[in-house]
Image 1 (tube, rainbow, N blue to C red):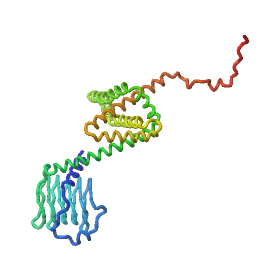
Image 2 (image 1 turned 180 degrees about the vertical axis):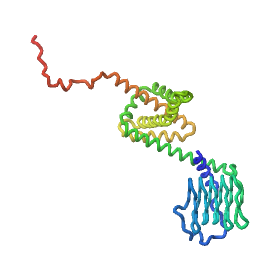
Image 3 (image 1 turned 180 degrees about the horizontal axis):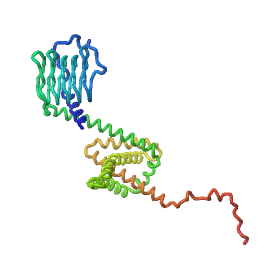
Image 4 (image 1 turned 60 degrees about the horizontal axis):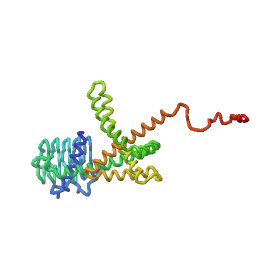
Length: 328
């Protein structure tokens, strides 16, 4: 959770910060174009220390959990979420530190703003900050944070849509008979399918919570709660397959029907309010159809006598001659 919050804050800050300011800082020994670039133009460090040695340059530099030591040049912005930023070189954009402080040496230079969260930066008299030295305010990133959350939501939506498609293709490959078995109850047992779907969608979490509050049932309760998301996803994917099959009909390949149903439900999920209702309905109906198909399959197995296979003479009696009928 700490890393997730830091990542969202970093994304918002990158949207907030403008492009590199016009630098009036004294240039390093080599010009920016003459500096040697590190392995990547943008350096992002999740855990650890970021070092930009003298004579090297990067564009944006972001450190989530660790320190940043800049003896060379950062041509755009430097952001340190949880750590110290030590600047003896040049940063042409803004410097942001959230939970620790920024320390400039006598030759350190920041062409943009020096923004801090918890601790005020250390800026010697001989160091240079062309912009402002100011504290970080969450109100400064209201619109930018909203934009960042929108981008994050789009990424999550795309990831979820692709995940359901891949899961559906995998299930069609592993269990093609199950895909065919759900077609019959989907058309002839709509009412029971809806009833069983509602019972499963609501009953499983309620049962999980009830078991979790008891001492003996805690393990089983947590297992049921952990299985909710996979259970709901399987129900949703089942409805995708059924929608595509309903639109295209039986002559088409199963994966084509799944792709069509996936596209229809994905587009529907983008519509406010209607998308939520469609998603809930898909989960409920998919779970109900699976439950009815499973019950019917088990019922047919129980109704089959032991040893019975199919109608017709047995192989052992095929060669036994049949005596003619007595004369009348």
